[in-house]
Length: 286
Ligand code: ZN
Image 1 (tube, rainbow, N blue to C red):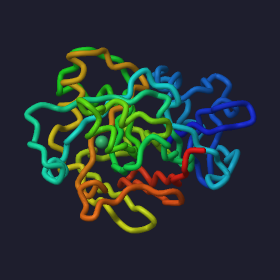
Image 2: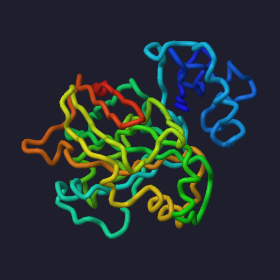
Image 3: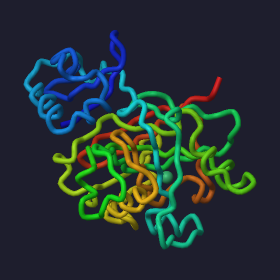
Image 4: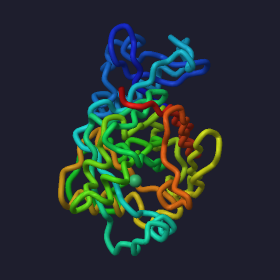
């Protein structure tokens, strides 16, 4: 299934991609919750019930849909730094012996088609295409062998990054540099795990104004998805709806000569095989 959260007259609603558009799941079956996170929390039973709506007539066309962040209010957004060897090299960093984890707040989320706002406080806003893992079952101390059972699915993500804050503020302000409002676009869809044959064999790319800036494959991940889930869940309980940004490949703007940073009017597209394309236009903060 391809699930989304869309804005409707009745508020944010979990939606299912069907032939010709999208179905509002709660409207189609009032036994299904309007919230995608609650739908995931319902486990197999509710997901099968949602899948049964696949034959419905669409409520709206995809082009008419106002997409919101796939999971609008996750308890946690975790991100992995330097998880592709080529990106570690271009950043002048060693390949880390253990995952480097940082976070964003839910206030940074943006949906497919929503703007990325360039903050007044930064002059060096950069792009990073990333595979996002959506947690579907809570767990602590999850063994690697069982880690994928805790995954609901995958989405395209964009880890927008203010390099001046991340790299040159005292101490290196990774948190602040990565969590400005709109710095975490995710979507358009959560593609359920059964529709992704191998999450470690996905082409991933980022286009800026139609020019390819990043192009790689998730087989290049240093730490695999099971390794990341096992590592993180030693520390904290992973909850349904939590998001893990798994890191970006090489080609980011600040490593280029001359550097490339986002400017108003830019269109950034993250495309991942089987997951679709996440498109956001860049605007200046008012
Ligand atoms: Zn990143």
